[in-house]
Image (cartoon, rainbow over all chains, first blue to last red; front, side, top):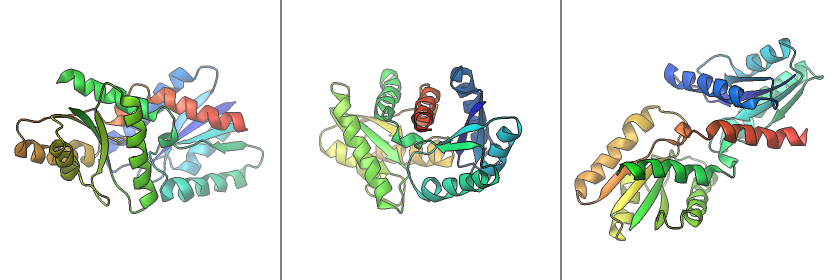
Amino acid sequence: MKAMLIVAHGSRREASNDEIRELARSVARRAENSFDRVSCAFLELAEPNIPDGLRELIRDGVRNIVVMPYFLSAGRHVAEDIPGEVDLVRGEFPDVTIGLAPYLGLAHAVPDLLLQQAAIEGARQ
Amino acid sequence: MKAMLIVAHGSRREASNDEIRELARSVARRAENSFDRVSCAFLELAEPNIPDGLRELIRDGVRNIVVMPYFLSAGRHVAEDIPGEVDLVRGEFPDVTIGLAPYLGLAHAVPDLLLQQAAIEGARQ
């Protein structure tokens, strides 16, 4: 079984955390054959945290996980905190493959996405 | 003249701010007929701030600006801070049209983008 774990920062505003949970469901609907499970976890301020999110997938039989940082820039969270938490769980489960995807901001399609979003506003003017 | 102003949070890490400046150049290269100018501004911690970014475009002859919040969730920054700074400049230049695009996290293509980024890592495993 293969899974994606979307990792977001987490917010004091519960509606923002719910947006991430809804995003995970939306990705799961599109994942079809690429991922059997898609769930989310938070670096801070919301549940589950990253180790617990990974452990839940492993407990459910997942043996291959891609961690997807839902961040736009490579600050300390992306460069140090997320890899550190992933390494913790790698140490607990050496037989499970846990990979770390490039953070969202690195996606080559981001410039086109910005143009599309701007066009929505342009159409309203 | 029409312009897009990409608004990011701003970081103490100058490399992160430079990523945004490079993103603006990348969007500009793709903007072709949709925008004559694409620049960026920061909510805090980096220059220019939002009012100065807008004023520079207006000084250069732009009369139609779409502000594009480079944010993944609708916290206080997206809901209050950015609209407040935009309103300030709207008050100074009532003949200039300044629209506010939906923040990046609302883009319908985000789930597919996450799947693409995860596939990059999946291919490495």
